[in-house]
Length: 299
Ligand SMILES: [Zn+2]
Figure 1 (cartoon, rainbow, N blue to C red):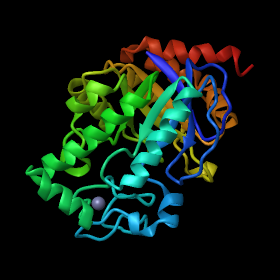
Figure 2: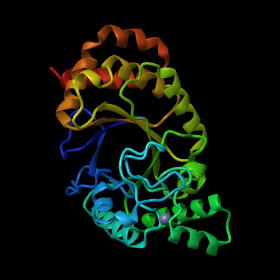
Figure 3: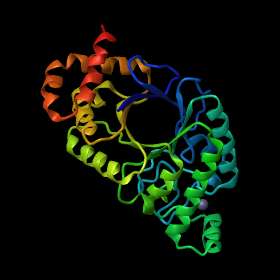
C-alpha cells in the first residue's frame, strides 16, 4: 500500500509516500502546480467559472446544478459536461499543469448527477447520437476522459464518487471505460465522522472487486474552515484505515486544508498506543507499521 497527503496548500507533510495538491478544487480558484506534488483538478465543479458564465450551469428536470439545489448532493456549482469552451480550456489547462507536476488526479469530470444535463445543446447532441440517453451520457464522459489521457503524458488518476452501483446512471461513469485510461482510481470517501467503519469497509471491498486498476481511497482529516470539534476523531480514522487496508485496496490519502493539520493528526495517531495495539489482530499490519513510522516524525 501507498499513503498520501491530499492538501489545499503547496506544502508536503513529512512521513507520507506521496503528495496530492489541490491545484484547482471545486471552488474554482487556481494555484500554480508544484514539481514534486501530484495535481488535483476539479473540471466541471467550478464555482468561479459558473459565476462568470451562469448560462453554462448544468440543467435538469429538478433544476440547475447550483450548490443551493437541495435535490442533489451538489456542494458546489457544476457546469454542463458538454460545454465546448470550458472543455477546451480545461484540456489546455490540464496539459499545462501535467507538464509542471508528476501527474493529474481529476475530480468532477462527469455529469452533475442523475437527470443532468438537459440543456438545449445536450438534448441536441443526444438526439443526434442515436444512442439511449444513458449511453449517450456515458459516451460524452468516456470520450472526454480519452482526450484528457492524450494530454497527460505522466500519471492520470481518476476519482470516483463513493457509489459503486449507480455511477453510470448518475454521472455517466462506466468503470471499465475509465480503467482503459486511468493509471489508478481514487474513491473519495469524505465524511465528518467515521463512527461506523463497517460501511466504509464494505465500499472498499465493492470498489476493489469492480475496478480494473489500483484503488486508492481518500479519507477526511480536516477541511478548510472546519471547527476542530466537528472533524473525524483520530481514533475513528485509525480504525477505518486498518479495516480499509485489509480489503486489499492499494492506498489511502488523508485530506487536510494544511500540512500542519496532518502533523496534528499524526501526533494524535502516535498517541493512540492502546488502540493501535488492539488493532494488531484486525489483519492489516501494513497500515499499523505505517502509523508506527510516524513515531519519529512527531517527537
Ligand atoms: Zn448540457
